[in-house]
Length: 90
Image (cartoon, helix red, strand yellow):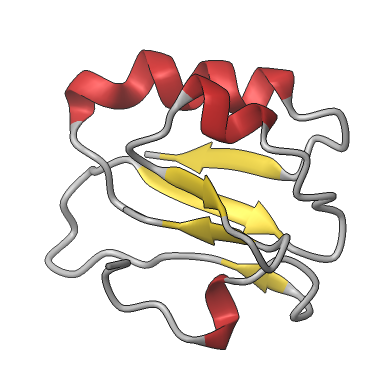
């Protein structure tokens, strides 16, 4: 089950979803521009721990603050996105 996701975690819901930190810690944050996302699942293939396209054909972010050991996978997912809808902060 996705953590803390409601409709804002769906592609096409509208706008950019950004995650903010608390306490000033430098953590990785996944940001998806759902207006640009096509839900083609290339990101899911690269980082299934973080991204999931479900039967409703919407992209869901499973972990908006993935652990550092997943950085390479998340960066690959961002690189493979044909619409460049994924960015990484932190």
